[in-house]
Length: 414
Image (tube, rainbow, N blue to C red):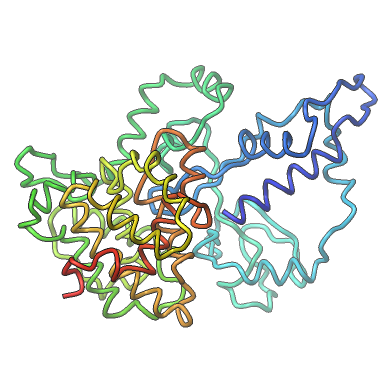
C-alpha cells in the first residue's frame, strides 16, 4: 500500500509539473487537473493502481499506459529530461542489490533477460551476466525475468484478470485479436489451478474424488466442522507452527512457483505432501492461496457495510469486542472454526515479530486480500488498509493482536 502511494505520488508530481506545457507541434489545451487532488485521483484510479493479489498471493500493481493524458496537455519529453533531482548511481546500485530475487523475478542468468539496466561496476550485458561481474551470480541486479503478452488470454493465464479493471480501449483492441470467450476460458483454467500436462479430478456434489482448492469450505469441513480442517490447511498450520514462527518475512517472501504449483496439484489429486521437502515459505504461500481461491471468501463482503460502525470504537480493545460480539455471529460455523485456527497461528507469528519482522500490521497487509474480495476494486483497496478505521484490514490486525479476547471460547489453541 505504501509503495502504491509513493508510485502514484511520483507520477502525479511529474505530470503536475508538466501539465499545460507548450508543444511545438500542437497548441496547448487547458489541463483537466484543477488541483493536485484531482491529478492524484486520476493517477491512482486510471494509471497506476493495486489490483488485489495474483494466483500466488503476490500483490498486483497495474500500470495503464493507455490512460496517460494527451500529449497536448503534457510534454512527455520532459518526463525523462526535466527531473530536478535524480538519485546517484551508487544509491541505485545499493537499491538493486537489496532486492530479493524471488520477489522481483531475477532471471538467475538462465538466458532469458528482457530488460538490461546498466549498473556499475557491471558492463552492458546481453544474454547473461558479465563474466567479469564481481558480485555473486545470484545477486546480480541487472537481469529481470519479464514476460511479454500479446493478448488478454495470455495475461489471464498468468494473473486473475477479473481482479483488474481492464481499460475499454484495451478490451476493444483485444476483440480484434480473439473472441472474449477465449479470454474467459483462459481465466477459468488459471483460477482452477490448471498446469500444462496435468489433469485435475472433476468436482462432485458428494465432495469425494475432487480437488481441494476452489472447493466450498463447508464441503471439506462439514456443516458442523465434524470433518475437521481441510487437509492442506492442517498441514500448513502444523508445519509453520513447528518450523516457521521465527522465519523472517514469513507470509511475505515468495517461494518457487514450480514448487507451489506441484504442491497444489498434489493436494488436488489427494496425494500426501511432504512439507519438509517444500519449506516454510511454500507452506505459508500455499495457505494463503487456499483462502484466496475459495469460491466464497471466508469473510463475507457484507462486512463492508458492517465494519464502518467499528470506526466509532475508541481503542483496539473496543474493536476486539465489536469483532467478537458483532462480526463473528454473522459468520457460518465452518468460517468461524477455520478463522480461529488461522488467527491463532498469526497471533503466534506476531509474538515473534522482533525476529521474523512480521507484526500484526505487516501480517494484515499480506493476509487481508486473501480473506475478502468484492467486485469493486477501489472499495477493496480501501477496505484492505490496516491503518484505516472500520476496515477489514483493521479487523485482521486487531484479531491478530487480541486473539485471546475474540476467540476466547474456541479451542484452536488446543
